[in-house]
Image 1 (tube, rainbow, N blue to C red):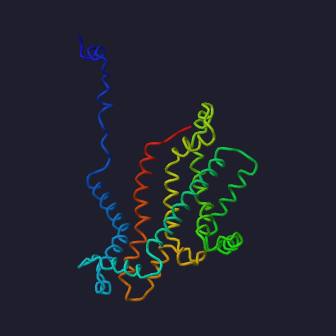
Image 2: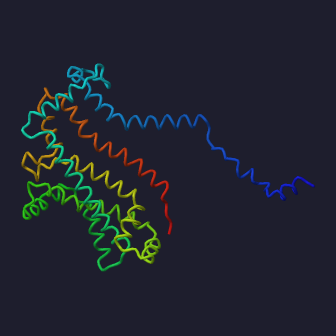
Image 3: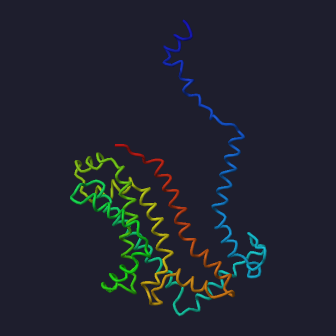
Length: 301
């Protein structure tokens, strides 16, 4: 019996080994080295501002005024952070109060914006009703105007409602940010309509379809939305709408310390680290989930 016949009887295909053999990448080792060096350079350029900010916060006062300046602290110390908390402790409004104000505004504003934007985007993306396209065009046009343009109309409306000098003067406008609605709507349009129809045939309600099927499948979009909204609300000084010191945000209080003159240069460097650490941590943890979701949840209609 020939070898070919034996392979056919054994159920083996002659070309199986060719399919299993992995194709070698069509590039040289030198090309790989150049590519990795370029990526390392880009990573260093992107990380340099953060590295320099942290290093400056760890420098003693004499190193902060040293010329030419050094990138890394020669004698690292945490005195800048301890001095910052001592200064905050001397204020008649405690540090914990400023922190609570910022956390409350950021959490409620982000959650409300995510809920409103997601529900509105679901209706615009998957339902047809009179004025559907006109309303979405209005949302797109609203993205052209910055907060500086709408600041006066917002103030007049919030003053009429009696929300000036309250948390709601920051939280409620955050609910209506057009960026979130636009992002969620564009992402939900790629969700298969057949998946939603199949769930309704099985007896799922509209709310059940929304939070059990739609939201899990658009996780990359709302995780990205959380990153943007947390950064916007955490760094919001709220000085235009909130006047009472006990309702001021942490960023406002820290920036007041930062503007205290040359003697508070070290504390100003520590303020920069404290202000940026939360948005960076949110971005780092959310980014890993976004990449994992994008790689494993592709759907086609």
